[in-house]
Length: 365
Image: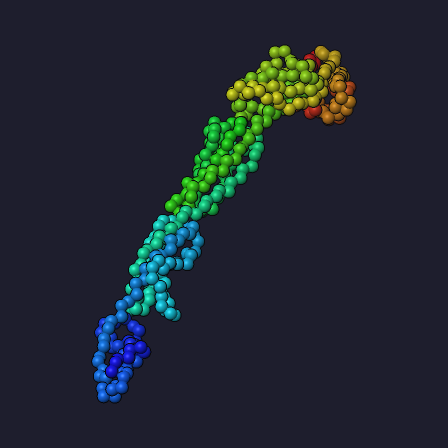
């Protein structure tokens, strides 16, 4: 008689992990001519089932500040699941949304008790967000016409933008106000240093040109003047018809004979720079004659105006003042030759006012 084990099957009561689990053995039989003289007894067999070791590593993740979190993932670095077994739950990370590093933890990720999980944490990195400045500046401006400019700029971070000037003698910055002190060219820089969550923004530069406008004005028919109300000019040289006027080095130029021609002035600033004013084309009274003088009271006196431009006389008024400044009479319809009579003896001032300005003294006896 022999024992036939060719078809032996040993089966646990279930496939779960445990100690002293019942094992059922089937498929053992006797063979030989005397096999019927024997009976096989059954024995209780037990054995244990060990858990499978699974090693998991969390995948490192990154995002930019302000973005949504990416999905947290992992990799099985050792071991494998049996059949249709799957993980349940998910990884988690340390809380926080500011730029920095955070640990990726196992969280609720798990398997059945048939597995032992060994977990390696990962790193979740939040990087600083990019940061850009938007800054524009209108240029050029004219010195004296614009004294202050309100600066405006914004950063994508929403943080405060700071302004600086490359030349505080031309323009200085106070907060977001640009104060203009002189003419010239200055660079205004907008900057923002960022913070823990935002990168330092690239500075934005804008050039501001402050022009100096040299204005020559006709004060009257005998005088032209440079406007120096901003106190920028230190020296003057006047020109007439493109030729220098010798000795005309004051803020004004005066001609007792009246102005006639094209006038402009070359000024030197306190910085030593030279600028040319606008040109003034003018033709004024070349002569005003009052005759006879002296004249007998009650008799006619002639006032003769002479000018290079026809019709200019009509744009004037002739006024007669006493020596004390009292207006005695006035001629409104002025021509080249004008007549008037004064009935009282004395000294009078004859003034031409309007397009032509000049004066003469008249003695009446």
